[in-house]
Length: 204
Ligand SMILES: C[S@@+](CC[C@H](N)C(=O)[O-])C[C@H]1O[C@@H](n2cnc3c(N)ncnc32)[C@H](O)[C@@H]1O
Image: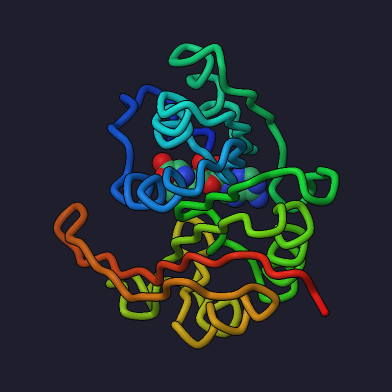
């Protein structure tokens, strides 16, 4: 099954859940800075996009799985949604105050992740905020399935498990504001994550 078919099937017939806690903690940093425009990368069925939109942000939501993205229109008419691969998005420099990626950037090899982070740097406005949460090497699924690269395994679909050091390296063009490991119990197994918040300083 292709990566796209996996995600298309995942969203079908599944009720939309409430916003993630990561979105709520992101908004606590967005609000005092009065940031306005937000790009949700890999928005799924839009639960966090809808949350941010309801808080008054101007939201652009991107995902390549139409099964998820088609549910956004039913929840909100204000969100601009784009059916597109994250690897192919094409926005002008300095387009967004906030880029938000909840569990959507840990599916790619190192070269692609570098391109996505470079592109994110380019389209984020100066002093904007970049929120990223990825699975970590402490996750219960780490090591399960076929090994397809360093810290990468295919089980159903490919997952690239992050370390704090790896996230730090990927964010080297940004100023890191927060970087931490978190974990939660999800469907009876321990999910572990690396969460980061970074801001854009001008390149010297
Ligand atoms: C674990 S879900 C997270 C969805 C959403 N951010 C949330 O937290 O509810 C991962 C999402 O990333 C999307 N995704 C994975 N690879 C993608 C790609 N190459 N381009 C666009 N979206 C992608 C999937 O379609 C899926 O909706």
